[in-house]
Length: 120
Image (cartoon, rainbow, N blue to C red):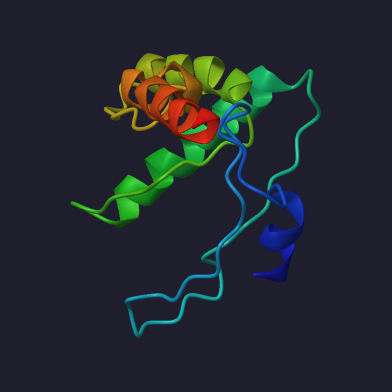
């Protein structure tokens, strides 16, 4: 997974919503040579990107009844067109963790508490 360690931010940044890469280990013993496929798109290709994501998700569900799939995006700016395309293609989905951390009430409370502690 050396590729992903290079494209993720080096450090976490709560204010930017940046999450650094962390190594992980599969809980499955099955090896899938095609588990990770990279589809590069230019910034102005949001519609093509959304259609490609929708096709990939649709194909996955056609071949994996009852399966689950996660779609990770590099920036939130990609989400709107992808979500709309999934809706247009009648693919049910759940949006998880798409709010910037800085907008969470709990995060703001934590920052406030830490700043008070730091000023002591």
